Length: 177
Image (cartoon, rainbow, N blue to C red; front, side, top):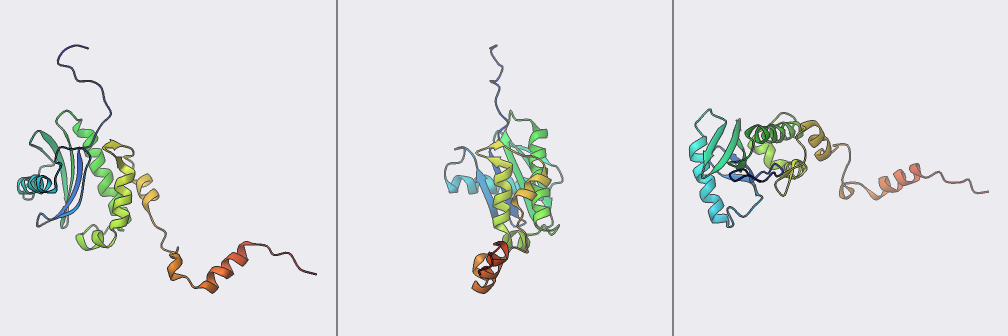
């Protein structure tokens, strides 16, 4: 391989963040040891927030990292990659995250709704990215995989009689003679 050329690799995401308008972390997932401690992560997040919360740009180079971000009502969404990553790929990951969460929250992308549905947010982001590898960038597929059907009640909220009745309905009992 010629000197100066990078080894080919998969597209990688270094981190995904969701912060509120005050700079508080609501969701953070770092996929490498760039910031090994929570203290270092918080320092980076504070620096990132101070540079992005009042600007209209969508991309920023910070500490040798590409930070793609998007604001929505009272939330800021970030996708972080290395300086060698393709910005368009990182933008597609950010768009997928935002659209998937928007679908899961029924177009109500704000802090309260996000906090009430964090389990769906975790599932959606896990469907998009695993250990930094980008798995899916289609928000329809991600939201379908992470979506909960509201008509399905958890077993704890069902009565024993309704569970027994639905089991009887599914089994065709032979007539006893």
